[in-house]
View 1 (cartoon, rainbow, N blue to C red):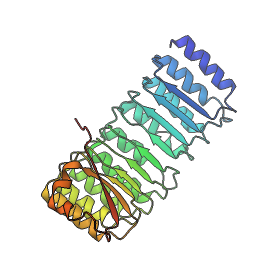
View 2 (view 1 turned 180 degrees about the horizontal axis):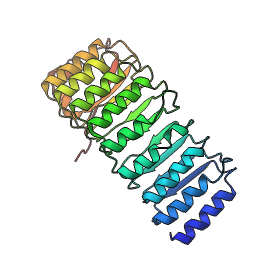
View 3 (view 1 turned 90 degrees about the vertical axis):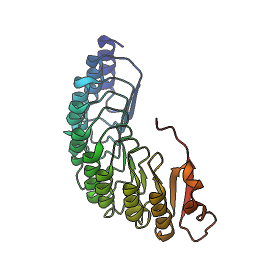
View 4 (view 1 turned 30 degrees about the horizontal axis):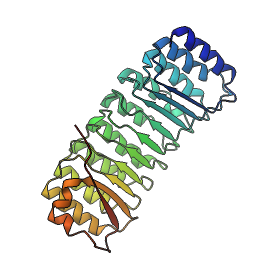
Length: 284
């Protein structure tokens, strides 16, 4: 898609801003200027009733990120922003973060598979206020690292509505998981947490077991596949499952754990307030 086509589409969107509820842009191969024209048109009027904006496999560039930020600053009705594989880097993520406080109705933010790293992730997550409407956050395959996980711990602690955190392959280590689980001890809203594929070993798994599996009153789905779980971690998970007294938990773990004695002993125990699912994902 060339710049002229992007400008024409932008004009059409601007003319219909008061009626369009959803825009989906996927694999268009457009240039930065075309992206900017399209997204800038969305924020050209405060009459916008846009609720869903999805961008998939489109390179938005600096101009596109700025246009999205400008749209967020006036998009009072936007409930979902999804931007997969858009090449959103540190600078562009920080640009989007500037307008997050103004997006009062934003319930879903999905920035998976973008080269967003720790510094920008912290800026983005710290931008959400205590009274934010955010319920669902996807950062899969964004290298937010331990600083990003620490910011997520703060978000989980202060947010009243956040329910779902998808954090697969985010480069979160032991320090990050310590901060995240500590924050979640104060959360009465998070019920889904996917941590699959993060470089967490037995010591981190033990924190997840003691703080979340055993103690969380709200968690109903937890994914820890693809972690380096040895005998010590397996024992901690098994023990926490038997201690659990909250809502029934669906737990996704590595397939090989089923062969460990600690997990074999859990089979058929009716008093266990959880169900275990064994998976063999490709984390390469």
